[in-house]
Image 1 (tube, rainbow, N blue to C red):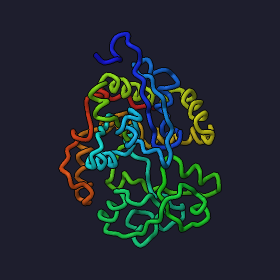
Image 2 (cartoon, rainbow, N blue to C red):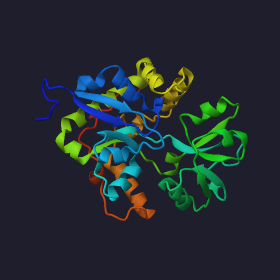
Image 3 (cartoon, rainbow, N blue to C red):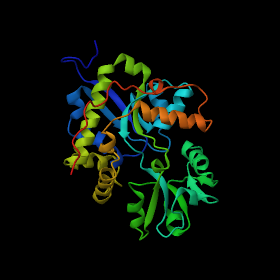
Image 4 (cartoon, rainbow, N blue to C red):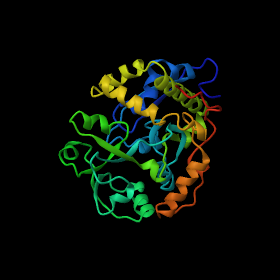
Length: 311
């Protein structure tokens, strides 16, 4: 019998995030602050990440039970033999994009031809843009700062729809973000666990997913202050202004709940989209092992009905 059943004590789990505490993780902090995790049957410790967090590796070896990542990275990790499985979406659409100054001549992805982009080398979406738009560009390694970008109106860098306009705006710089998802490379941000933990504690996985979805819906549509208090405790850079900006961006761009017209909803992953990503990675030559959506994800713990759209 699973330890979460009946009156058993909550299962203790470590949730390794991929980056420092930020509002883009607000649903989990809301679930933690308001006791949703414990009500569901899991005792969660959230461990903030960073450049060297390696959530996939930590979950694979049992140092953490859940982690955050991108669905394309998880597909490639499974090909490499890591015993990981996606259990739900963190965000329906990845806020990652290419950030340019407002006055930049780069208006479309095609305009990146011949340019230099500051980005994390080796990401699959870089290859996808080159193939899809028949362009070529150079990549210089990401250093996770804004100084060069702010100083140079011609600079182009990997960025985020949810934060770049805010940070650059503090320095009087207006920006535009070309959202990678709009190119056709529409990855999820996902939560994953290990195959062993899923097999041993399916009820704990179900509880974690349900509480996470509840936390996200409450963070986006309700009073977000409980989560924001914990986010600030874990990362002093989370000012009230930043958190309000990100929360609004997540809501207005449908990053969490997706597009109701497409029947997307908080936490949802679909076989169709996962298989689309598998096919893209195969076309790029990055995926050489035959895989299906059911080999990289489980669809057994997802919300049954869409929630009403917020107004």
